[in-house]
Amino acid sequence: MWGYVHEGERTVAAYFVHWTVGSPDHFPNIDFLFGSWGNDEVNDRVLTSWVYNPHENSFMVIDSGARPAAKSTLCSHALRREEVLAAPGLKGLASRCLDAVWLQDERVRELRAPQ
Image 1 (cartoon, rainbow, N blue to C red):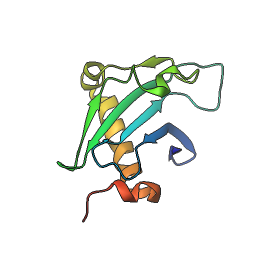
Image 2 (cartoon, rainbow, N blue to C red):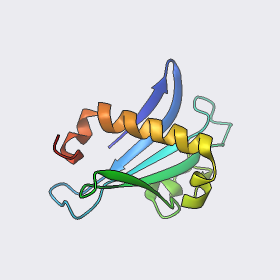
Image 3 (cartoon, rainbow, N blue to C red):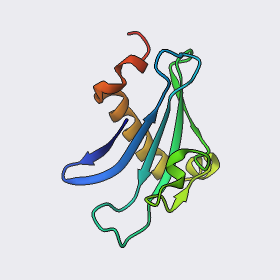
C-alpha cells in the first residue's frame, strides 16, 4: 500500500508499506520518499527505509538501496542506514512520519502489535 504524508497543504513524503499477509515472520517494511513534490523538474527526493519487528514492537532504520522504491524514477538517492542516523533532522522527520502512518493509517491495523 502507499500514500502521502501532508503537513497542512504541503506534501512531506510519499510512503510505501510492504508486508506478507498472514506471515508474521516476514517483518513489514515502510519506505519514505522525502523531498519536493508538485514540481517534476526538481529531483531531490531521498529514500529512507524502516523494518518493523512485531516481537519487539519496534522499528529500525535500514539501508534503502535494495528496496523497490529505490529503483523508482521518483527517487534521486536511496539512503544507507548510517546516512539517516547521521542526519538528526531527517531522522526526526522520518520518525514523525513513521508515527503518523503507523498510528493513523487504518490499512496497517493488522500489523500493529495487540494493544
